[in-house]
Every structure is written in structure tokens, then in C-alpha cells.
Length: 157
Length: 157
DNA sequence: TTTCTAAGTTCATCATTGGAACTGATTAAA
DNA sequence: TTTAATCAGTTCCAATGATGAACTTAGAAA
Image 1 (cartoon, rainbow over the protein chains, first blue to last red):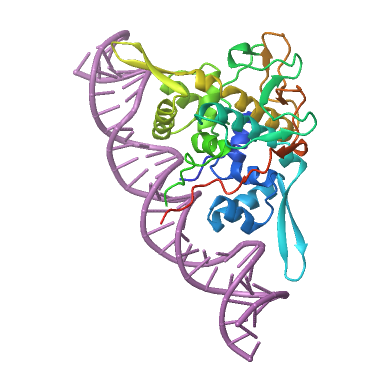
Image 2: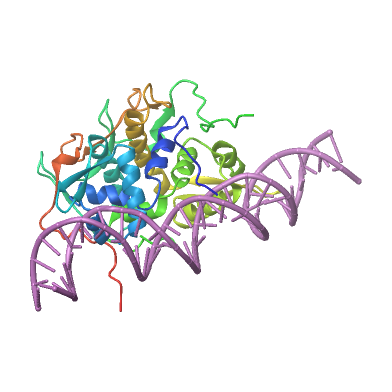
């Protein structure tokens, strides 16, 4: 059967999962954020099958996270770049990486980034924009009496 | 062909994607963080097929993000709860939601949370633990001269 | 006795995936 | 002048995986 379509759900997690909820898309975005640009570059870096890569890149371009641009005319050569929307997704990857660093590796995290503006080695934390404190699950509650579930569209008929 | 296994890659994004890189797992975790506990609860809330749900829950339990516990003995009834590892994943969902709120909805975000400790409505931001500033993609560079790619295991032979 | 609920399992079908080979345009090497 | 190499894909196939529907099991309720 065809994969379910989450893009109409009234939930940001669902819509985001619909876009990047497969095993390759987050890695394509990770690579793009580290400077990989060409089709073969992604292939070599990820070991993804070319046909799957085509689909993933097309989707990312269609959804506006990446743009395809010719960098050479004869012969035609293309590269894929993150758009603003795609750049803005990088912090999501950082939060995934921070969780993985903590829970999926016994020893030191495998890849480290420097936060240029402060010079420190980056440790990413999800915080509350208002108070600046780190957000933990137990510290949250729905606003008002929101009907939070189900978020999927009612079947019509 | 079989889905590629990312769990051996030297990359936290890859290992995390291996765990939650499908369309349903993030939504199961989202529901769990909002209080859904029973098998049929997840079914009703998500509209997921029972068979797929079984696989997802088993995986989450096997990986230690959730635990299965009997809440009734005769008849046997079970519930699924987030472990500490699972709770700790909630901020990743929040960063996904924040991105989705911004880029995938024209109007107001569909679901809002209150940050109990400060009382404000939550807006999640990924920040640098050192300086507290919001992290943006352009402000990052690899530490030292890390060989960041490829991160997948070399084929042996 | 029949129905109901919770928590799954089994089944057949259809979609997606990954691997390998192929295309086509151009440049570089022998 | 062949031959090889590079980049950016497309095509084809077999195998795996997802899906909805129906079924199971254990006990409770009508």
C-alpha cells in the first residue's frame, strides 16, 4: 500500500515527519549543511542508491528546502543548495544529533562543531524562547483545553 | 531490497534517523508525550494499522525509548510509557514542531504548549549551551580537521 | 449464549527500495 | 582517433516493507 499522507494533518510534527520521515532525507540535509552539493557527492558520501537519491532531492526541491542550480553550462552540471527554509531545518538536525550523542554513543560524540559566534564547541539545547531554560518533557502542558487528538483528517463519506 | 542499517555509522544523525526515520515513529512518540498509553489509544489517535503499530512499539521498547507495563492482570492489559531516554527525545519533537509551525502552516500553529516553569506559551529554540544564543546554520564549522565524510562503514572484502 | 473490549497476529496485495546496468553530453588521455 | 572518465541522472528487476481487513485470545458484561 501507499505510504500515508500526513501533509493535511493539523499537526506540525506530522507534517514535518511527512517531509523528512524517512531514513535518507535527514542525512541528505546533514550532508548539504556540511557542504556536499553535487549528485555524485551525495552518492559517495551516503552510499544511497542513485534512484532513491533522485527522488529525495526532487522532493526537497519541490518542498522548497533545497534549490537546484547549474554551476557549469557545457557540459551541464548541477548542484543542490539549501534554501532559507532548508537552513532553518539545520537546528532540528542538531537536536537529533545531540540526542544521539547522549544516548547512542558510549564514548565521545563522533562529530563536533564549533559555534563561531562564541568560539565554544557546540552543545545544542532546546530552550524556551521566553525564559531561556532548557525544555524538559515533564514541564509542559497543553494551552487551554485543546482537543489535541486525533489530528488526522476525518474520512469523508 | 532490505532497508539500509544506519546503526553502525559514526554519525549521531544517522543513528537517530535509523531509530525514528519513518513516518510513524515520531508520531507515536508525540502521542506518548501527550498521554496516550494503550495500543488501541495509539490506533485511534493515529489511524495507524495495527500491524505497523506493533512493529513500531516493539522497536521503541527494544531500543529503550518506551517500556511496556501491565496495568491490569485479569484480563491482561498493557500500556506503553516513555522511559527517560524517550522523555529526552521530546525536545527533538519540539524542534521539529517549531520548524513545522514556521514553515508548514500559513496561520497560527495548530497546537500550543505552556512551559509550566515560566508560565509562558512555549516557543522552542535550539541554542548553544555555552552562550545561550540561538544556533543558525551559517554560524557553525567543524572542530579541527575532522574527516566528516563518509560516515558509513567501509564495505569489507 | 452472545456480545464487547484490549491487545495483538496473520494474510494478501501493492508500493518502495536498493543494486546494477544503461544513457548522454562533454572533456581528457593514449 | 579511439578509449576512458566524469557528472547527472534514468531504467529495470527482485526483494522487502507497509497497508487494510479479518482473525485470535482472554476475560467481562448483558
